[in-house]
Amino acid sequence: MSQGVSSVGCLEELKEFFGVGRVYGNQRHDNHREHMMQYVVSDRWALLETIVPFFEEHPLRTAKRSDFEKFVRVLDMMEDDLHLTAEGLVQIAEITQTMNRRKPRAELIRILRGHTPNIQGTG
Image: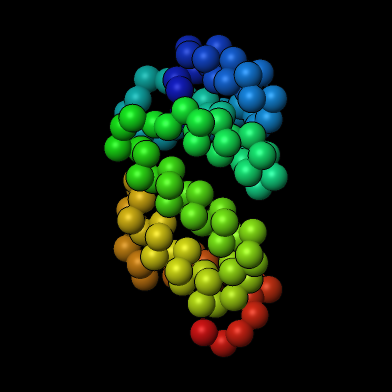
């Protein structure tokens, strides 16, 4: 979740409420007036044990609900170690391609190829 620097208190409250994650700054290099602050939970265990159960109990009522369901599906695939195979990475890329910040499939594959030295299989 992102907020302007002036609204960082909201993000700090989220961090305190969930008891996981961190808040950090993200300097902007566009025409916005202030830098962005983000609340980020990147630990898979914290996502599976804290964040996902909360939003399953309190479902989103916006267009983000579909993205959340896809996100959970990707987390489940990672729990099954599918991200360690070429085929699994392609499946994950195809799912994420349909989410909020859509990237062309070729771009996702390029990104994955450059950041996955421990992939098993030949694809």
